Amino acid sequence: MKTDNYKTGTHYALSCSKCGRWVDNVGETAVKVTCSYCVLMAVGWPEEPKSTYKPTGRPAGWHWMSEFVDKDGTVYHKGKEVPELKGTLSPTKVKPKKKTKRRSKEEILIARDREKKKALKKAIKKQKDFLNHQFDK
Image (cartoon, helix red, strand yellow):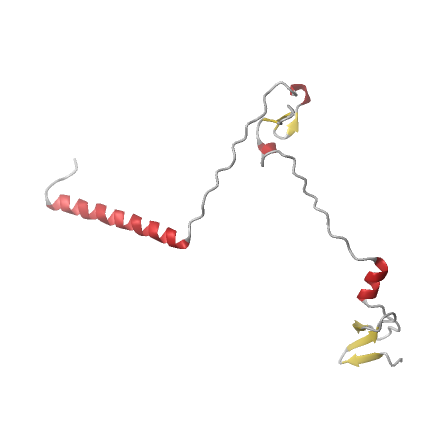
């Protein structure tokens, strides 16, 4: 065996044949190894993945609508184009979704406390009316 290898427990390591970096977990019978950096230099660095989503300009869920008319006059029924109706209908007007503000834990607890107080006041009033002989008919 060469001097550019060593064994730690059950694992063998060799130095890269191109740059000299140590590569761990190689087989016992391995004679020569190339590190991942040298492989990337030879093959080339991976490119950034391109975005596959391309916005169409149509509203979300347009293909679920029973009838949708695009800006250019194209008519769709349940997402399928109906070419014989093109240009016969006016474009569908889509209302923007109303944004709701999320309540914090504190706001939820305050609202729950108000409801409990309201229920208690109603129960107290009912008891007072009973004591004052004012029954609901």
